Structure formats: structure tokens, C-alpha cells
Length: 217
Image: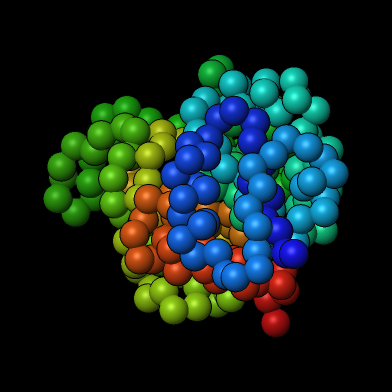
């Protein structure tokens, strides 16, 4: 039986994630919510969710010995990072006075800042960004199949990724500035938004992920 492993390090809304995956899961595929290395390594697909503060997430990842598990999954499996599961893939976050992350991709996680205003309307923008926003598809990818460019997705975050290699950016969003909201590299696709809360577009993205073999050709 094919399996998708959802890595549980205590910092994600796993109930919502599991329900969304169950909704789109093809026949013959099993969902495992797990912290077990062997279960993750045996899975056909890996989902790495997360929410909360970067320091707390990294503390739990280290406490549960999951850093090598995530590193190996990133190297070898179709891998979907979500929200904090995107941010901690980079080297360093400004959150909490500065937090070292997993360092799998060069770059930083930066604070939006206070007192920001919309460039067009002048409206004061709330931090965290909480609600619906558009994602511009910066390049083609199998996970965009059936999803219109500039579709709406649901976001909750105060920090955004700033990868050094701009070729990794597969999607961008406007909020205080245009920032990278989707990172794609080989078998990895990681998003700032919550597909499990993003209705049709989010479910389509999860469907595409479970069909994906980890290649982009």
C-alpha cells in the first residue's frame, strides 16, 4: 500500500491536515501521522506541516530527533512543507530574537515589520497577515496543475522567507512587499499558505502532490 507520512512534531494542526488529505487521498493510499523515522522513510510522500513560533518548532524538532529525518526526506521523497514547515527549511529566522533553522536552503526568514501600508490604497496592513491572498505562479510546476494563476489561498503569518537563490521561488504574494510564498527545488515543494484551509485551490494542490512522483519534467 502506498503511504503519505505527516511528520508530527507537535506544532501543526494535524487534524485539519489529515482531514484534507483524506478527502483527496486516492484509493490504495494510507495516511500516517508519525514521529517514527522508519515510517517516514518507508512512505511514498512526506508532508511537513507546522505553525507557531520558529524557536518552539526548532526546539521540538531537536527534542524529538527529527532533524535527520526531515533532511533525509528532503533528499529522497516527494516532500510538501507547509507554513512553518517552509520557513524552518531555511538557515535563520528573525523570530524570537533570532533562531537557527534547518539550513537546507540558503536564506533568511524576515519579519514583515510594523506600521506597514498597502502600496496602492494606503490602507494600514495588519500583522500577522491573516486571511486570503493571491499567489502568483512564477514558473510552471506539476503542483500548479488545474490551479489558475493568482488563485486565492489562506495565510496566517508574520514572517516571510527570503531565499538567496531566486530560482527556488515558484510563487509570490503581495503583502507589505512582494515576497516568496512558494519554494520549489527538485522533489520539494513548500508553501507559506495553508492548503488544508484553502478550499478548492488548496485541495487541488494536495491532490496534485499525492499524484506527484517528485520530478518536474
